[in-house]
Amino acid sequence: MSESTSRRREKPSGDEEAAAELKLGEFQDVPTLTLSEARLLINAVMDHRRLTKKVNESEIYLKTQDYLDVFARFKQKENIEAVERMLAAKTELELFERSQLGSLCCETAEEAKTLIPSLANKITDQDLQELLDDITKLRHFVE
Image 1 (tube, helix red, strand yellow):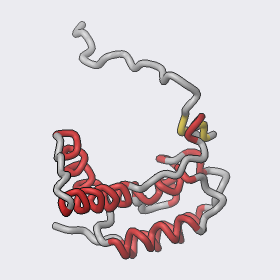
Image 2 (cartoon, helix red, strand yellow; image 1 turned 180 degrees about the vertical axis):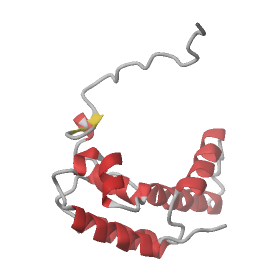
Image 3 (tube, one colour; image 1 turned 90 degrees about the vertical axis):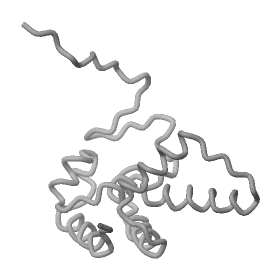
Image 4 (cartoon, one colour; image 1 turned 180 degrees about the horizontal axis):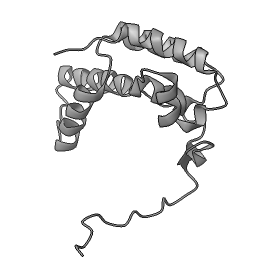
């Protein structure tokens, strides 16, 4: 038999869990960002630093920027703000769930509830699908 090439997964250190029951420990009510919001924020900070000549583009920054350029679903500030307004209106959802919906941009309520299990009993499939459809209308793909 061949030896497994994967390593054993260590148990998380703490009580955090993003499952059917959302347990985020000390991060439970901490404001969160979508990937698009994070990209917008990092770009604004770096633009300001370039103006003040305090630029330090480290390897970590460059890798983070590359990641956000690939995975941020929304590039225009107006669309990012519109998605945030839509998500903020869903007060029955946790901040973490809202940011996940804005980052993942699921196509169906079933997909969203599979990827974010804690949504299951918080929002109806119909309401979730309407939200996802509204978010999808704002998506722009850059080729």
